[in-house]
Amino acid sequence: MSLLSASIILFLVMDPFGNIPFFLAILKDVPPSKREKTIIRELFIALLVLVVFLLWGPYLLRALQISKNSLQIAGGIILFIISIRMIFSSPKEIFAGTPEGEPLIVPLAVPSIAGPSAMATVMLLTAQSPSALLQWLGALGLAWLATGVILLLSMKLYRILGERVLSALQRFTGLLLTAIAVDMFIEGVMAVFERGL
Image (cartoon, rainbow, N blue to C red):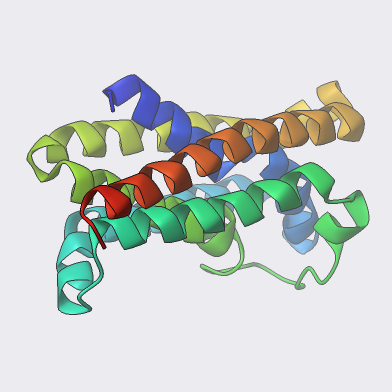
């Protein structure tokens, strides 16, 4: 996988367009002067979480005796479930159960940005090619930066695009992710059969 393709996959998994309505709902009780600082803080927390999983994920997998193929199959299943929710979720589901006050770590940094699929994806990248660690860090940085820019402009984008366009973008992202998820799952299953397990 190249730097560009890894960056695109991570960007799609972080789903910044789909997160805009959610971020706006969560931050509705935060003073406007503090919203940008809150988003930046949560972005850096999410980046830290993903870097930890990128660097130490393979060691955790070895400690738990989880194979690369098992992670790939599990990652494909998780990604598929999340992408299906992205395609079929309604605005009511997006705004339901949002906490009041200023958020910290949950639910903006984790799981909105650094969700299970993003964690599984960065771990899978490192497990597949540990020697390309700098490339995966670069891909994560690019995807995170693009996600950050979109989320920092969330108020303006929401006003310009509106809920219907953002919902359509989320569903399109979900559609792309279903194809990636199925591909991950098939590759993992084929690798298991090739090993004769």
